[in-house]
Length: 592
Image (cartoon, rainbow, N blue to C red):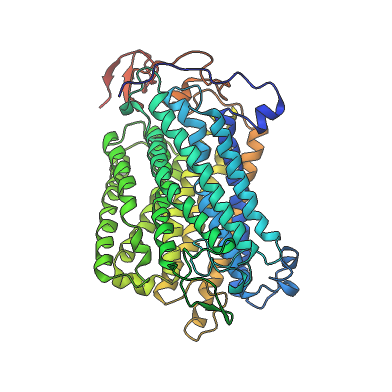
């Protein structure tokens, strides 16, 4: 494909406060807005997890002030089992959609994709603005579920039918709260589809002169591949949510079978299939894992290369592995449904691609580790979180090999083993990529440096804390600890309560450790040391412009790209050990 050489100024510089900071069409401001929304969502989600953990270790204990959040769900500040499920639903939904999708993909992708490929802005700036505000509206719909009379839904973040489809007869939160949940995710899908189309068009049409696909930095490739995954995944979840809402408010029966009796009431539906919801949801749900993790893979690769001062063993293999992961992600959704009564032959057909998809992920990991061997790594907060990402990804991913086997998964599926697996491989690993990207790109985004000392303290608290929280989950699962229980009263579960207490204390301490990051982020934004334009001596295009970048990124100049993005461990004409992509100088001599 020929690179687009035309760079059109889509809009002039903003002239009013609203146009500059609120309803902005500047991709950099929109990226910051997505980051801010994800930051709010992650702290709300973390607070909800604290409430759940406190309840688990003392089900009859009072949590001061909880009745202000829900007088029905916490009478006398004592959480009911149903409200525990409501908090679980909201925690999962916030984290999966509004944190793990927004932060590594929408926030960093919006800010840096155009700059890394040499564009002045996104292909469709107004669509970009619409994408964020649609996502923000979805967030408002979700939070509104806390304030309706029946409270948030109790159906879990997967909202399995028929529990989520029949209405308030099924229990607390399944009236207006569940409808708001469906409306929120429906709206979120619209925003995500707008963003995915924009990312794809920008990558294919607005690359600078000389910026071939092969010269794009790995994060740009990750955002591009992720947008292709998101385009199909959210296009399936969107109509699924619409059908769910219609079942609830319009009397349709897409997911509700005939003869269903709930709360002694025969439901007026016939002909629906609860399994249809599972198929539609998980056809989105497993690609969503890679929507969350692939951008972090790209960010971590980019930071490690810079910190090692040498390229990875194979730049092209890394990109091809990410493409393979994106392709295979649509072939494995059935492994979430091994306990649904699936035909054993169908289970086997989903087991095989589930094992195959581990191959490109393993190759990626081996390339990272082999490239690190013998490298003189620059130890920064960003590089520590990049290394932590690899550790979390491997530790969490290994347990996935067990869950790929139907005979093992049937035993473990409803236990804490699965919770530990996906929290480590999808949640914590992705967040480590977000932290790495924040420490690495903060100087470019703000023109100021974050405190490296505080960043390293934050890393060690988070790294140790994450293992202290989620590794015991696997032990609990092997011991048969069923997830979603709000109290452990069975004889075989009572001996596990000390483990839950340990996890709760670790979760609270680790969460408090995030206040160090929040302080560092806010304090550095206003009082951090001024950042040079290229503090990490990086080679990609974002480091060839001032910090923070001007509104049109390149100050009216059209960059020309001469090199691939990772010319490290070389001796250019300038005498440095790296050569910028925009530098016309020739690489005179390799240093070995």
